[in-house]
Length: 431
Image (cartoon, rainbow, N blue to C red):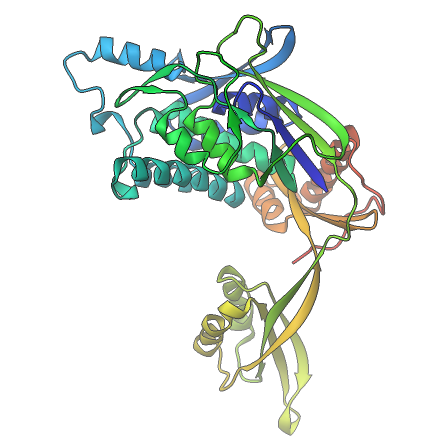
């Protein structure tokens, strides 16, 4: 199993996390495309810097040609430029609804979109509790500024690309002193950071500076499943993401270490519902539509089999596999969209291989690979819908797109030391 370990000896922030992702192997092209997909006039500037003898990747978000600033410097400049206005005016913030709308309409993968929204919702819940208001009324001020939106959405895209099974973190060094926020001066860690890190092990090394930002805390809260010492694993590679400040005698970096944990039989036991209906008087064109429609409505798998029915009429057996909680809703779709007068229900046990998504870069764009394995054997296959979309948009043969995605996956796994035992041909698609 793939493990990612965050060494937060100098805290964590959005830009440090992005730098660590890039240094650990996430393609820069993926993050540049993700920023462009937001359509908010921002771009990334990526550089190599030195922090107390440690070479690290620094990511800066540029909005209208200006770099993001540590938030106390942001608010100092804000107060100077807007001395006649209230620094905490809602006019300078973005609501959670607006942020979610921007993310929801961005041309990024559904997995990255969902993760980015989850991180922002974690921020929103923390702010709402602090201010004792409803979450949808929260305006994020600097947390909803363009640079933080870029940090969070790019972080989500990078996390998906790494395809990690478990995120683990060290205790977090939060820093000390005070920090200037939208609502005034507060002790470090800031109120939102404290709320987000409830239950996490934290400490201060004595540095009088904010080391864990609310954005960094939200990423950690959403991604990290446990806080522990360095886990038992075979190290594949490590990446270092640099913070904005160069602190004398202290390496202001976040280290991300990727490794393989002990091999386990990665299967899961689950119960699924099976829905069936016999059809002998349905237009074949409608049958194809029904299969596609059921899949878009949450079915795990849909298929048809030719059967011989009463009076020797040829027909089709429509079978739907779904989660038990979706069975009633999908049954109604079968009644509404087909000519059946009855739908059979039953529940069955299923043992399924755990699977994960890996994003690879082709010359035409990103393609998700579905990967599963057990006992050293790995099955992998490019996601059909991604390949079909690329083939249609770029007028490239579908098989060419699928072949290149598979080759890019094999090249990536070899360069990153991943286990690719088994056939070099793509495995079966995993529902």
